[in-house]
Length: 258
Image 1 (cartoon, rainbow, N blue to C red):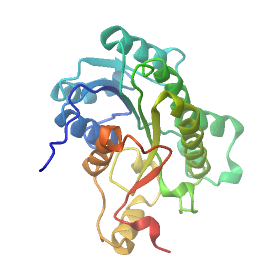
Image 2: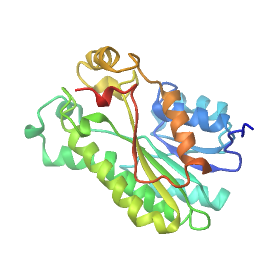
Image 3: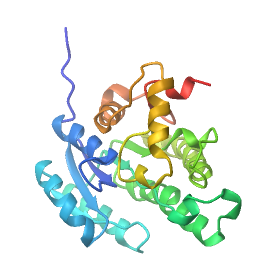
């Protein structure tokens, strides 16, 4: 007997949608299709015009500004979610940033200021979101998911300072999973392969990374934001209730190849 997959009754926050090509939007679209209620955030007034129509399409009850580098904005998102819903079931964190000139330069030449800000936005914001989510998940637990990349494990040309930052993010996932497990809060990192998103366009020679992924991956294709969304939907569902602390790839198997 087949069992219908549904996220009806689940509510959560999606951080990081920039446009309809974003991995975060691919996640939000699938979650909405499966019945989840969403809080959608946008970075600033400039990005609002791109994200607002998407939030409407997703029937998002909450549509809020969130620049994690601005004190109080992340906290405000969770406060509003608590006011409207009382509790939440998941958080999707799809946020990464580094100074463009330092991303294009050598790690050894990175500045303390640039590296620290990139670490705060790309990694510590997930830790802060986890702390804020904990109090809203105490009744029945929940799921926290962030996005990483294979350049955390191996040296990938032109990924530069983001490699060690993503490595810190992945380590944080494991520690958060251990700390929050007693509260039935599950924590995962999802590692998409190269995809033509706005964020990826900042990486030099990114077309070459995509070509290499297609050529060398066992399935000879790229993943899509919707592919990521389907994995995320599984991870936040009750079907994955005994899984936590994992790193899961959506890259057609590219990460297994030498």
